[in-house]
Image (cartoon, rainbow, N blue to C red):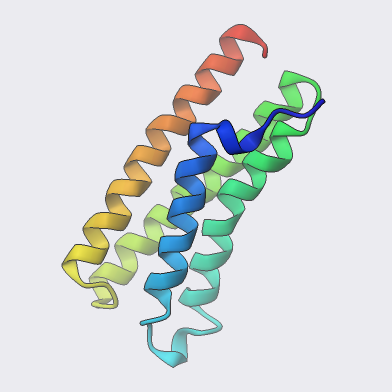
Amino acid sequence: MARDYTKIKAWQLADELALLVYKATKEFPKSEIWGLTSQMRRAAVSVPANIVEGSARRNSREYLQFLYIAMSSLAELSYYIKFTNELGYLDTNRYEELWGKIQEGLRTLQGLISYIEKSGV
């Protein structure tokens, strides 16, 4: 039976972050719809989606593979958030909210990865 991904803290944070990214990118210039808006949304949704897919895998090696993909997408998203802030697409409050969620997500996901690597869950 698959793990209940809705109870995984890393997934909860990633899902919240994806929603925040969708809301933030609504404010981006229309010229970015196929550029940064699309890239940021893709990366943001990739994080919780990979946690979900990994949680359905039976062995820990496969689970970890998807968690590492989620971590990579989260790192990619962190760059987009920094970059779009430098472009002036994000106001200070929105940037700080997103950046804080990214940092919390990275710590939580790394903690989950470390736990699984040690325990083999």
